[in-house]
Image: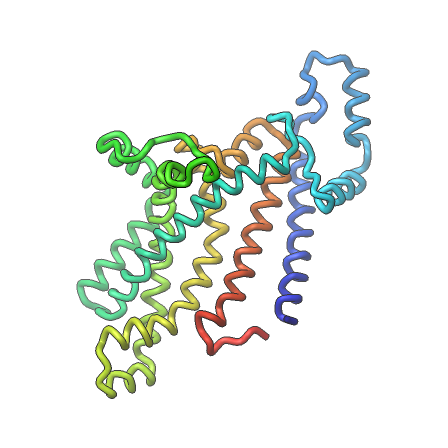
Length: 313
């Protein structure tokens, strides 16, 4: 329990720093929020009244305090672009992007773990070289390249999946997965390369340890030794690295959702940046940071279940 409290306190401190940095950076960006709302041809007196009502004439310290107070009360402000409260907008979009993140992570783990184990078992042989080559290719090529290739092959040539569009999971989960599959696969292939290398390195170390040699000496089948004894000891570090990569996924979906015209959290962040929607930029950055830290906390709590040798302390 003390570990969880320490982590929550650390998360709170980190979120405060992120909120300060985000608020300061967005406030030094060029542009006047009042002019963005009312237009460049607006009456100067009306602009002055709007700045006063929005608190833009207050010091940055007061503005930041009001913004944080609004967050604590569940009020993230109003989007200048969409003319609606940001809270419900974020909730809808982050649910859609969570589907892509979950599918991407599933694809990466389902491909990376068998490939990494295969390479570790056949260390310094052609299987290991093949796995290394696949990893290098995956790391070297950007995610948008995989996205374009998948659109050309599976959407345009074969017609198996839509090349663009979006369906919310609450409307039709199967159709939502169909629309999210290609961007998820594109992100998953890039992530797979990193996790394959991690799995291979971890399994190589595990398979050289004494308890593995004892298990083999007892006459256990090689599959049991590798998958039951070896992988159960190696899975913890792999899952931890996968959790750390959620930040990479949330960053990459900005490009991927724009490429596939998938109107999730990444698309929303891009539109906010493109249109200088300051309240929406602040809310999306803060929400993504909070989501990434929460996921990493959950994975840390899951670690002792995956590897009973580890205890939270």
